Length: 317
Length: 302
Image 1: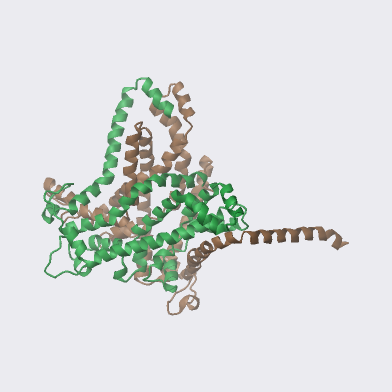
Image 2: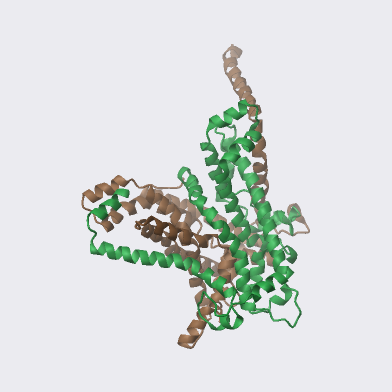
């Protein structure tokens, strides 16, 4: 009796499974193509995630990963008790905050201005020029900053000296560190950042503008009531991503701009991880710092996503 | 928007609108200039004399023209060597990137592949979370790749973002072409190599350039993984020459010249920047033709 009722389902299941294996065999070449990628992700992406466990150990290279003793949350406690923690948090948040209010709106404004240009050749030329800095390495951007601003023959200070009789220590004065970082980022990324907004703008249905013109809307009214609302979803999505990365200040730029005189305002989580981990060999401690940073990032992106969904019905996931 | 342009020509534009346009054109022209003026100064300055560089403010055309800086660069082995290293890193790295990205993207573009979603989720998770600097460094060290270029090539072999863009492109690829190749007896890799890739040159070029520029500009990887100064790329040399040292102090260890020779320090720095930037500026026009399209393919389908 039982056999009789169960066998059709059993049959179906084995049939299904046989069918699946047949398909997998048929697609064997595709799996072969997948293989290098999968191995890459397992080794170089998931491998380091496994390695994060040393944040809870006292990793000693001569003992190796397995034999190093577990220490629980000791590394995290050390970090939070360290006076450096608040300095790093302050520096990181301040740079991110300035980036948010200065470098985030810049591409939106530039895209809106470009969108108002009717001469196609002029528009294309400007676009070509403003995309260039994105492809220039951070090393060169910082090198240019040094060459232009140095007090030993940099042209900015040459000019200042000629006209005011004094020079400004741009590169070593802690007061100038954050403004320089922001200016560099604006110069390097504003043009590139316009691409996504310009794409959104070209996708706006022209009939919206036609209707507005018929209704007598002036240019700035068209911008206020059509262009900006159509741009908002893109702005919000990018804002969510930006908030998620609020502790990502970019290692290279800060590292290259940092020197012994401005270290107090320059040191951020990323550079601290490098100094403690690579230069001083405190692998477990610096891994704990890095892990703290990524977890805060994940929490923040979830929170801002939730907030955006509540406020505007737009979300990433 | 075409219509908007026509309309505003037909009806006379208001004064405010025209003032805005004038301001807008001037501002945008200024913004565009701001992006290339630094390079014009650097190029001009690399041909200038030391005296001119240390006393003048901004200029593009030097008063006296000299090739000293370039003569010096090409007479020293250290700079030429770093340039060669950067080329090796860029070419080798880009080839590895393309091999890994294209093969995986092509397989993931097959929509009915069993296990496809699991693999895609595995990749997406890596976009949200990663091991971080130190665990990656330790992995590279344990694999014995320190001081080899594998340390620069393998850890970033696939960018998940690029992978998805390339996959989206392959998903759009006409299935009939693939089917007919398979009926003619091609297996999947052969179809990919002989049919699909020759028709995807634009996409391949885009991502070769994206990855290539990344390798050319890389600083953090070489800083972390290369201790041997003979293997250093030009970005590290730049940083040692310009940022980490002031004046000519750092040059002594860098180059092999008679001790009494005074290199043209300022012009030399500018000339090194020119050498490190010109290749990027040369590929830029090719890059530009594709990247907007490339970025769009990805962002529209997400």
